[in-house]
Image (tube, rainbow, N blue to C red; front, side, top):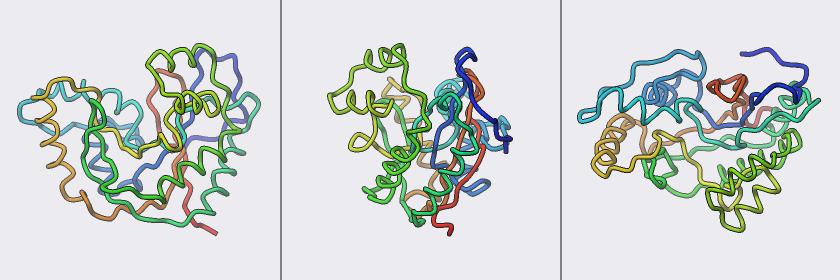
Length: 244
């Protein structure tokens, strides 16, 4: 675990960010499977040999998982944000710890699904508990977020947003929150080829077969950090749900 920093200042060029994720319990089967698929363990930082996929070269699989590998195996609850200038990391952690105490652990079931042009582990069926947890985290932690810049606002808007998404972007710094939120654990980048999509889908079904549509206990919320915008995200702390 990284040591707390006293405060994050604004003068670092493209400073790093924090994010609040659901990530599997360290060294659990889901954590291991996700880390192997992406080729990196976000706890240890170790680069891992990815599985062999018939019909896809190892170089192509590495390319297809590059962006997901950068962020680590996770589902986003509070999207990456720069810690507000002058704010102490210790206070952010204290707030997260308190927030998590008010939420009881629960279970979800996952399946491999396509989301747009990429694949992810998604809910087998809607789960109000994970939706509520994400909304709660977003609202309670937002005071620690440095406001979005005009440049970031323009970049987000250039990709096309609906009115609700644009409203979220202005108010919360990210478009896909609340009613726009979809729990997902990203497994690939964009795949345009229908043939590649079929190959990757079949490989993902095999890779995660032991855990698909089985109860996965959500008992921790995780804080991740990247030291700069080019650096990968790493787990820095965990907060147990329902711990009184």
